[in-house]
Length: 327
Image (cartoon, rainbow, N blue to C red):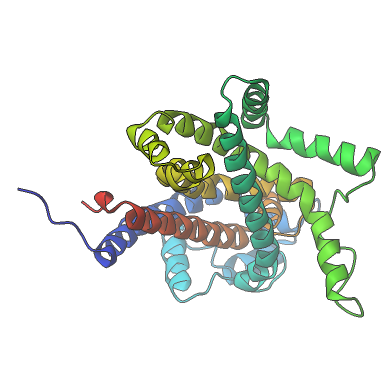
């Protein structure tokens, strides 16, 4: 007897319920690791020791005199109310600090997704059209290099070549011009110059992965019966490519693009730091260095939520394209 296929709303609800314990468990583990890393109050003084009275006052003010488990449950209860606490360093609400940096991270992430998806799929398709040709071998070699070489090395090399030697693109920061007394077109061009290097470096790994996966799947479906049938019906090679080959590997590509979300978030911390990009990744790096726990936990929770949302969206698209997964 066949099992009844679940509806999309039921499937979505099931997925949401499944990720709740994962989020809570991840937050708990991260909270404990940060707590075990040392006393944040003493780190506030930097190279200078704070007076005992100041340390005692700050410890009570931030609730650090309570047991770890109590601090964790207090933090969770505040998060459910939208309160991520206050930064130890800046004394401002964590949510306010993160939201100031979020547009820069979203801009970088969106540009990275566009570059890696378009170029990765295009390279994979081109390589599959002429297998074992010099162009195919070149694309495969570049893909292996891009997949295996650390992003940090690519970042340093790109800054040295395009910023230091050639002077074509800025290597640090996000902007030169402000919106005040400046045309919108000039501002867009200015932002694009700063965006090119970090977005391209951050997209290299995903681009290489997509190129390899696209090529492999295109070669796999090349000699399938439905491809032969489409050609026998008089379809042009372009129609066969778009309507049959790419359409049948779309599920694999969507899954891979969704899985890239987590790696993109983790990679943005390194890339934003190297390029001095004023995003959430650089904010979290500075917060970890200064033991600003509320900012670290808040940034982690928000980025984890973004990753889960992207993967949930991927699952939904997958079920729409292939209802067989709704078992």
